[in-house]
Amino acid sequence: MLAVMSIPPTTQAIQGPAIHVQGLGKSYQELRVLRGVDLQVARGSIVALLGSNGAGKTTLVKILSTLLKADAGTARVNGFDVATRAADVRESISLTGQFAAVDEILTGRENLVLVARLRHLREPGAIADDLLRRFALTEAGTRRVATYSGGMRRRLDIAMSLIGNPPVIFLDEPTTGLDPEARIEVWQAVKKLAAGGTTVLLTTQYLGEAEQLADRIAILHQGRIIVDGTLSELKQLLPPAKVEYVKKQPSLEDVFLAVVGSAGSETEHGDADKGDQDRKTTSNER
Ligand SMILES: Nc1ncnc2c1ncn2[C@@H]1O[C@H](COP(=O)(O)OP(=O)(O)O)[C@@H](O)[C@H]1O
Ligand SMILES: [Mg+2]
Image 1 (cartoon, rainbow, N blue to C red):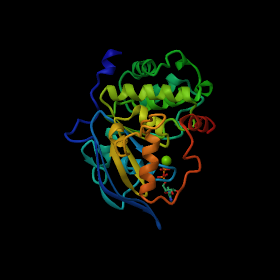
Image 2 (cartoon, rainbow, N blue to C red):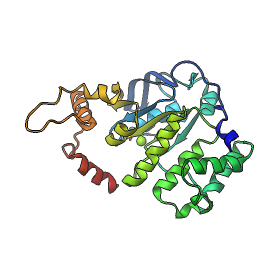
Image 3 (cartoon, rainbow, N blue to C red):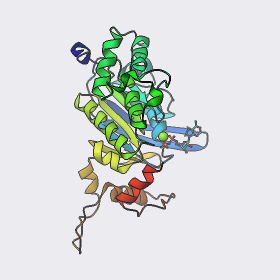
């Protein structure tokens, strides 16, 4: 089991950032979704790509994972150009979408063994057991996935995407639709991944998620990355907290609304002025 954990990444680590995107453009017919996206993701870091619904997050992730071709610009993942070295990019990544791709009829362990076999890995059983342990699914491993909670399913989905030990993983809205407890479980799993050296690019609509997880936060708005920095850098974009009756540090939500608003948004969010507590309630109901 220990030997399984120390398998080096399938594709050799290449110098430079894990993800390097320059001037990326993509349109669907008349709809210009990406209009010159620039982004760099350092190895072993977690970057949250934040954006409203329809901002183009999934489009960007699909281009980076070679499922979609860009119209303009360049993107390299693990040092490989997505346009000319697609096979190498695929060897370097895994992609977990918003909807879990696990087989309900099989047990958690069977799902993992199946994927390990499909990838022609040795000792698929040992790989499965190791991942079950890492994602706190050992006991559940012998049960059919149909009996799992949303959080367990998503954890299994992420575990499956790690088989073969890709150096870069894309998580497209990994916690959308999960309740707060399950969301925290997924966050812990993602944090462990990055601690182990995996580079994580995740997309999210939840500002709190970016705040909790990410080393850096990039905000995608109207086809461009309008802000990219650490949480404290982003908070410095706003004037320092005023001392009135209550001193309040700007939250990521304040920063998001300020920069999205200043970029000339035509989309207004009706619940923009709601507090943290309200937002959590809303995401609960999804
Ligand atoms: N295959 C497609 N054909 C046409 N329009 C699309 C297609 N995929 C996405 N879109 C549109 O592109 C925009 C960005 O979509 P998407 O990348 O899924 O955004 P996000 O993931 O940030 O919600 C949306 O307006 C969406 O309706
Ligand atoms: Mg999306």
